[in-house]
Image: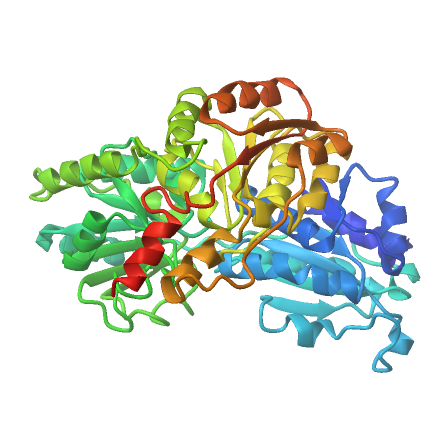
Length: 552
């Protein structure tokens, strides 16, 4: 006989869960009590949105569902930001929400939220467990649902009185991962199309990759001399010094690469939906009928043909397809080999930091230095904003699982993700790249890093504005500043107030020693970089953007 709370923890343990991310609530005290005697580590967070983002990062970096626990009402609604990221980024996570007692439902009881209605449009599945005896069945199903096909978030509501029921339930067996493989006829058709192509291009993206699959895919790309790009914020799917690598595909795409993709006669799209951002607003591949022949490989059949009509639709996980494709080889040197070399050279030139900058801190020089000191397995986490361009364009990702950033463009993601990444991989260096507006969306999770001993280094680029919005504002309404200015704290003092290490950088020359002191501190650290707001992009200032609009 076990209580519902004990059965929840039993099921987590049976499915290999090592840690959860939580904000406590009286609605699931029975689970917290059961965790007291469990080996599962509870990372106690400061806000439910941050906890859910940590769970998303775990799903992103491991392929297994990240687990988050929150209470009802405000807890459930706060966590929705992380659930939305997991949905749009196709990452497996399970959000457990403490719920009002079964007898009080439909009365708008204290903090009551209808989880099915609230999460119905962004979660893969929402379930409320009324019978504690069904916990092993339904929670294990949650693991299967979160990981199968297109991965995503599952929400499990737990009525508080159900969690204290004592029941007899079957022993828990772990979920079974569903892997779909391409058929021989499909692989033969892929080879036939490649044999006919003159200007092919490969785009890698999405989730459900493994390190061995990435290695297999990159080996096949080299044999075929195929040019390859990685979808927006999926750059760690190919070594960017690989001879076939042509650059990232999406926001701020290299114009030469964008033209090549538009003029390609065959696109092999592996693992990603290729939504609005990576497709440059559906211009690289036109929807619903691309100009190019399209081979679309995706693990969920419902996505195949939903936005683009493919020439060949392959319902397979990217990992399975990569291993199958690795068994193929061209019969002769492909006619496009020279173009592949040209595209890689263009990428190298495009990703070289600018030599000039605006203000006392020149970020081009900072990035150039960082590329000489960061290890190849460093994990870089960031949220959303113009500040991310410096990493997005100028850091060369060399290894699998070294990037944690939301393709959904959600601000505040970097710090929670950094805490989760360091917790999962304590022996690897973790750098959080943040803007001033971005950081304070979930800046309180710096306390979580201190409490749980996660010595991350947070680089905050502070220009005193919501930079991306100001850039668009000056582009559309030049000189009419409204709602985009910020007054910021001393972020170095902020770090010290939480028990971490703080540094302030006001000139380019100050960055390197400040960063090294932060790394050497052995504590969670913030490097507060004071940027001139004019340095809004690597190549244009706010004044130049404003002037260009006024000249029209």
